[in-house]
Amino acid sequence: MSMFAILFNQMMTMSLLIAFGFVLVRTKVINSEGARQISTILAMFVMPASMIASFNANFDLARLKLFGWAVVAALATIIGRIFINQFIFKKDQRIEKYAATFANSGFFGIPIVIALFGHEGVFFLTPYIMCNNILQWTYGRALISGDKKAMTPKKAFTNPGMIGAVIGLTIYISQLPLPQFMWTAVSNVASLQTALAMMIIGSYLANSDLMTIFKNKSAYLTVFMRLIFTPLVAILMIYLLPINNFEVEIVLTIASVAPAAVNTAILGRLFGGDYEYGARIVVLTSIFSIFTIPFMMQFAEFIYTL
Image (cartoon, rainbow, N blue to C red; front, top):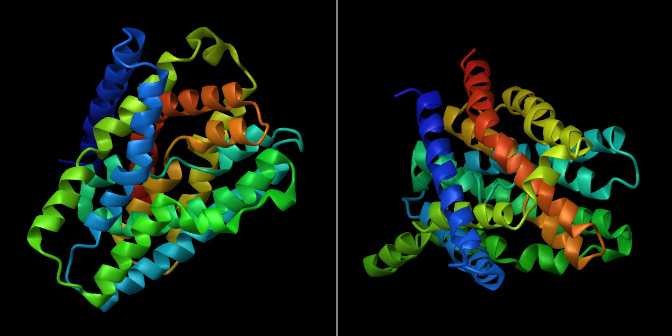
């Protein structure tokens, strides 16, 4: 099966799960507090478990070097987006700038990577999630709040995603012999990733005014920058780096083409931004990404095989 076909099937599966989450909230099976609790479980336990599970492999120096190149590529593409969006958006368009810069590489990226490469592929997605988290809680927080003093390096390095990555990397490098039942437990928790992540997106959709989302013309520039323009730049940057590994290049691209980070809404609420507008952008980019991701990945596959 071609990568386009796999991606199309995965996006349709994810769409059904989003619809399931939407129905659960609209029929009041789950309320806002329940959705928040599921989101907490996902962020605190399931996503870190997915990262740790990806490190369950024999140590390979060549693979570790590719991990290092993934860190370089992640930093280059995210910082590149920061630079580009400074020129595209006005100074007071803080939510738009944040949404166009930071992708939902964890909640949205992990399910797609697993569909293509299994949990082993998350190994190369982890560097991107690490860099994304660090920059979201430093530059991103300062951007949303409008105060450079609001940067919180401690939060950047102590969030669950970063802790999961550090634990996994430590186990991988040290080859710590953990019993099989522990790996099985971690894998079982990690397997919840796709369903829970998409249900959360569905809950955002259910709590939003659909007509307001689609009528907001100013948000479409953010959608274009998040899903098309900056991913094209990222694909070019990844192609120019001496990675020379198709799997790593594709995984990094998946992280780059994902919709706006959920933190667009969360940080907006915490630090004085427009929470509701941020949530609408998250929903809007998530809806359009179902259609843009397969085509962007098809283009990336063409470029990387030149």
